[in-house]
Image 1 (spheres, rainbow, N blue to C red):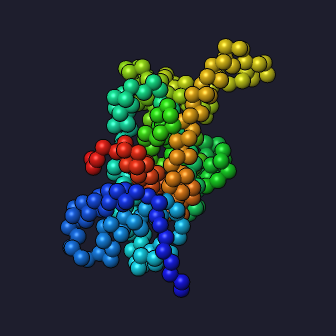
Image 2: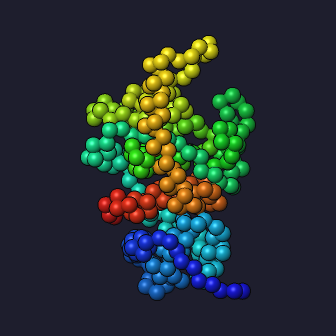
Image 3: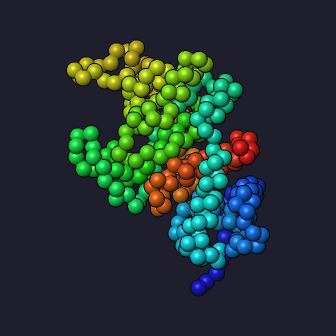
Length: 279
């Protein structure tokens, strides 16, 4: 064994923030003082290492002198307290109103994962892998997200299996609130072609005519303007997955993907001064 030192490239205040959340959780659980293998701060560092770089949880636990089971338990605690800090949908929309955002951007992403052997019946009556996305040709969980016009992530949904279409997931999680936002506050939402037919206030590209004709100049101009506005929002998922690389492939249960993504959102909000405090 060759020990070595490394630097974790996150602000110390972020680790302190997570440590405070963990301390509050231990207090809520009436955890006896001194009964844990790691202090709150070192548990926070352990969790942030996993969020930042992913990797083998067993190896990370060994670095911190804890067992595999303890490592998974400590990580789950950190994910739960962070996910609880992520803004809910209505909180995010209230913030958008207060900030007078001209529009929002809706997008979905498949977060790759393993442990996806569950089967289901498709709408055509065939047996399919519940967590397999035919669009992405990969297993994982589908999460929906709202972004500010500059691409900053504002909200992330619960996870849906990878076989669920973006429009279906959006109808379940967010479209009703976006209709009200467009009607009452005049804030539209921009989305890509996967959300065609989403409804009032959700603007998607005009599809090519089925008879092979070209789009009219007005429709082509509309699509170009929509694409130029929406493309800025596509950096939102890149901001999350490049900063918190564990989102690039999750080895935990796929049902945990939503909580992990929400936890990453809370970390991002804190780093950018967007998190207002413990809810």
